[in-house]
Image (cartoon, rainbow, N blue to C red; front, side, top):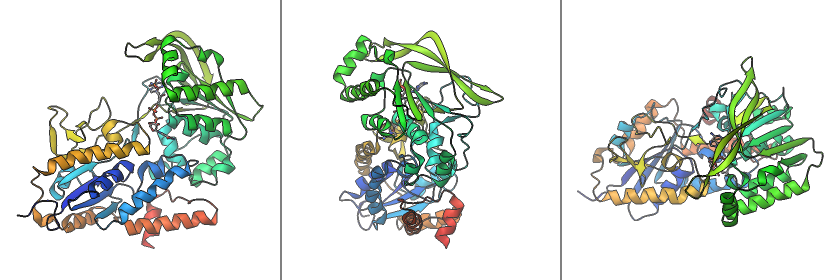
Length: 463
Ligand code: NAP
């Protein structure tokens, strides 16, 4: 029998999830001497994961990265099966039947909970769903965000997602309307009465997770003042040391000092950044959010060169009509695939998925991206992460028995997927939808007008 990875016996790999981490894994798989065929299986008709449905609409240039992914989709060694759900249309065991190796690139589809009373009141929502809503993710297009009956939104968290949702809430809508933001969100934001967003960090300005370009963008928004509380900048010794060492913290600090010095300019809208406060309860009336109770924190040395927030007992309540909880994403368990509930990811060693109980690698199964390492890093972070997993996969090729050669032409699995999904979306189908969206966009001087309903996407493709 010829060796695996040759023209006669190409290796077959399934990549589950068509986001950046999945594409970087495909790129690494194709860039080697072995003959590899890759099937990308994606539950949505559309590819590109968070580049399409996570990256902020006012950060269009970041979306240019899809040109690389498009080239991979066009490669004859790659097939795209959109609108196919792992778990319902194909199981983990079936994937093992048809593929030599499987990579889960499923990201983090859910949100972390804060575990405080009132989190489930109407008007309290994870920032992840607000992001999905304004980006036209089909699963969130019907989410309801009450934006026209109050003036203030509180955003909990100090990461870049908190920055993105804050901008979306106060940025001039005419500017957002030139982007690929979903039409329903543009309409919702046009009707919005929100004039202030309070961004609450549990630790200090030095420990904020956001990056400087995003912080600078706050100050560049037309008609928006940036407010800060000077007392939040009295630094404890550990924070002072961090500030001296950490370049991003230093740059952030300079920008925030600039905002403090600049003061208010009488703008109609404002962003108020408050540090050293933890939400301890979301309060409401008749089931709807009316405010957030915050407890003042002090920072204490955690003994590892960092600081943690510790409540002082002093509280304040901020009245608001909506709370967006932006405290991190979380992966969702897939049927038949190990899951670490505590860390909210697929347990693995160097990308090899391991059994949760005995911690040994399970058969021919790998993971990349946020499902592998947790929800951290920018799009580019996924490249070395995926390359590392593919390195593990290659190391395993030597001992790989592989699937029976009767499946090696890829026809059996294609037939099965077509029989399971209501309508498989191929790369050519996606190109049809892409042209539809971009031409609608061109007519409005926008990059694209997104179709946000799966049924409508499928109809456009059929037509
Ligand atoms: P993140 O960067 O991990 O930030 C999470 C924030 O939530 C932190 O400030 C954290 O504070 C806070 N937090 C966690 N639990 C909390 C609690 N119980 N109460 C109050 N605050 C709490 O996560 P993210 O903003 O979701 O972003 C995910 C990743 O995507 C990040 O790597 C981010 O940089 C990236 N991203 C990048 C961009 C961009 O490049 N423009 C845009 C969006 C997202 P502590 O630090 O105290 O834990």
